[in-house]
Amino acid sequence: MSDVTQLVVIVVLGSTVWVAVDARGRDWSRSSISGTPGGWALGTLLLWIVFFPLYLAARATAPRGAMFAVASPPYAGPSALTDWKSCPDCAETVRAAARRCRYCHYRFEEAV
Image (cartoon, rainbow, N blue to C red):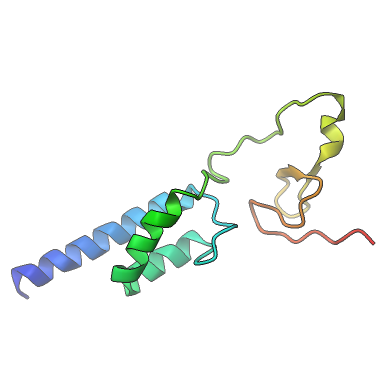
């Protein structure tokens, strides 16, 4: 292998590992490109020239997600307890109006 080819392989593998680690700490539930950290890592590995710049642009709008979220909702007054519910799948606290859990993507049944 030539020196240039070795450098390209090192850059692609290194940036893929960085994307995989960095994406785990972000909330991708609103992403239209990839909703999972594994999807970002696989896309970066297979099609680096497209996915790596897309990831850099998308990570600016993806907030820190489940890894860094607080376990309980912030206190907002006496009615704050009725504004939240617990996810039956992962037991995280989410807003009462949520249709999908932001942590595990569990879909709540719609009120009839």
